[in-house]
Image (cartoon, rainbow, N blue to C red; front, side):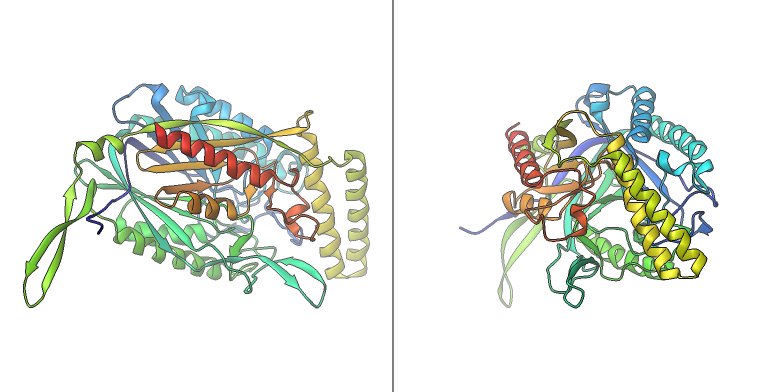
Length: 482
């Protein structure tokens, strides 16, 4: 049997969008890297942006049939900062928290704005910045809801080789280093979406790609969205509409060219992804059409002709499904460290760093500071861990017509999305990590005890990633039956 129709994955939804410039002030506390020797941001490479999407069912304009999807150019938020934002958004938009999905581009050059940074140089600017950010996002949420209109999202897929596996085995030093690993494959999938009004005007594009925004590292002192900024600029210059970036499952993926001080490298990476996204967007069929076989034409050869065919009633109905929710999945935690011991460890490392600085040993000072930073981050994680033995990992699984939108907490390894796509090969899947606060850290496959960096900051026990894959799979199967 020959295929006579090539379906164009589509969501028919009510859609509204608003954007904010959320760039922090120069001078705010900045470093995300333990090896960094600066505290305050010295400038701005490209602005940080926040995108708010309001999505709802076509046939139901009620608030109960609305989802708010917020994408922010931050590495993430701590638990208290995130809960303040979620509460403010819920009140401003008139929605329950279970209708709001907030995730992050995860740029490591935006600044780190958790409460433990406030006592550090530049930290005094954090509270006012976060308060202003909450106000901006709430205004944007109301605007996005107000601008909701019937739209068609058409999806496609492309390829980009900017991301690489980053679990590199250093034979000489007998350890794993977190950087470009040319000996392992990397997921190169780019999922795109084109959002059009009913008269065909493009109002936004979506780019879902898995790669840690870690082009810029400890030598960079500028606020930056990393590669995401140049990627957006490339796509927006061509389409004339906002490009919304949705990070993918990138726990073990980072840029091939990474850990740089030069913003030019971040822009190079962004252009590479932008051109790949544009290629996929350019290949999309017209809105609400499938590509159908139209029969033979006798010419010098007998030609098989294909034409774009408008959706029939059944295709239109299927593309209007709008179901799903935000919930939590309880996952077991590793034994938690002693906070008193962690604080003592941090103080010891800081003391050794001070001695190294006095002695003029820059390398030792950098390394001791990095050790102290690891302990500082654990202190913050332990302070907000639940008393229970399980951690409530946030999950969101929604069906929007032919597409499934998935968002999960933490930083899962890329196998989350490659395995889900293997199980559901005919399904368009947009998969995002970093839903909610960044407390959980990494979700690894069965790779514990090998010395991988990602195991050290993770609060979750072995087997959690596999449990998450099974949970999301079950949710997708449920939604496919609706």
